[in-house]
Amino acid sequence: MNRLTRLSAAEMVTLLDSREISSVELTQAHLDRIESVDGAIHAFLRTLPEVALAEAEAADAARASGEDLPELAGVPIAVKDVLATKGLTTTCGSKILRNWIPAYDATVVKKLREAHLPVLGKTNMDEFAMGSSTEHSAYGPTHNPWDLDRIPGGSGGGSAAAVGAFEAPLALGSDTGGSIRQPAAVTGTVGVKPTYGGVSRYGLVAMASSLDQVGPVARNVLDTALLHAVIGGHDPKDQTSLNDPVPPVVEAARLGLAGDVKGLRIGVVQELGGSGFQAGVMDRFQEALALLEGLGATVRQVSCPSFRYALGAYYLIMPSEASSNLARFDAMRYGIRVDPKAGPVTAESVMGATREAGFGPEVKRRIILGTYALSAGYYDAYYGSAQKVRTLIQRDFEAAWEQVDVLVSPTSPTTAFKLGEKLDDPLAMYLADVATIPVNLAGIPGISVPSGLAEDGLPAGFQALAPARADAFLYQVGGALEAALEDKWGGPLAAQALEIPTQSRVKEASNG
Image 1 (cartoon, rainbow, N blue to C red):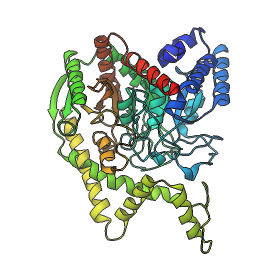
Image 2 (image 1 turned 180 degrees about the vertical axis):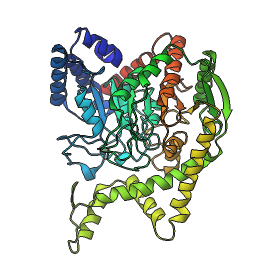
Image 3 (image 1 turned 90 degrees about the horizontal axis):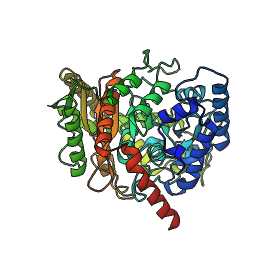
Image 4 (image 1 turned 135 degrees about the vertical axis):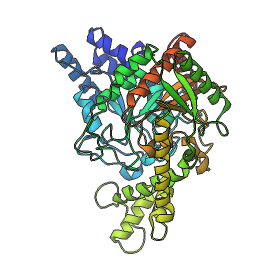
């Protein structure tokens, strides 16, 4: 592996600023890495070599001219295929959008371009972000770089796998019920779901508008914070965008990396642990708590009783909003069009034939569930009741913030499961997000950082949650835990632990 792909984004910036390397060299190294290993991993749906190298040349030219550049200028990045990219195909992992080329960039993509981050390509995902394993992509599953027989999480498994396999130092994802954090947990990477409205959703193809949030993925806490600082901030094109400055996430990450969490009040969510959580995941979680306590944080148990109903509420609210949002894919305006095989060609028959051919089984399942929950006679019993539970969950969080600064739990109840293991059991698949869903229902920020390896040798994730607009707390706690684990492991956890499995598994697959 080229030494350049092993660097953190912050290290890349140092070398770029000193002119020891160029953005073109850096981007080409990652394109070569993708060419070498992505046949086995399938993190990318498409790469953009010419575009990426042209953007890298522009970054180098801007730096050479003495232009005052954003901190990550010249560092390449991968983008989840749920974000619109002008002139470039955006499929959302679905056949129904296989030929859709947006006429505009999502706001976060526009910010990447303005900050001179070369876009390497679009990453694989569960169709319309509906899934926890990236097995529901119409273009085939992504494989976990730790073990190619296992899932990389979902729906943003492509972004997490690309970062975990050193194909990209940074990536963008979207998180509706854990789709950034859960993949981060099972691939040993860092993923953040910002406060709802803290990062623009303009140009994000909506699944559930009250839950969706764009966020950063990287291999360490500081890199994640640096990317958050680039994409965050108010956007007048997004009616839900907060009119707030970006929280001081980079400063908080550096504070945490210096071990400064003394006096921070940490609450362990009693309802997010125990039965159903893998022993090795819980062991790493308890060890992480001990490390933070050793740095001067105070740890106490906190009960959030309504969390036990979060999964049920989420799987009524999310499908209901998805059913409404996906009604736009009607074969009349954009996307594929399929004429009926028999009978008259009417708007209704064309729409039915197109949606039947274009949507996969998981999307159809959720559309049916959501349509039923919103139908006359059932709205109050299902969707209305779920919204009441959502309010109770928000009140649990409000009560918790009176006692603690941050809440913590394991990110995912288990390490990565095997490909195909839960495809025929939707409920078992949905349970992968049991610890991440409450965050989206409340609109608060959450982070997943690696907590070590479980007994099966696979990564486990540590989740921290903070009050709305207090994203900086996440980076402070995450940075402190990362630094403490580096001391324990004798070096960076991601680079040390990921490199050998990634190379050996990919080599084995390539030779097989």
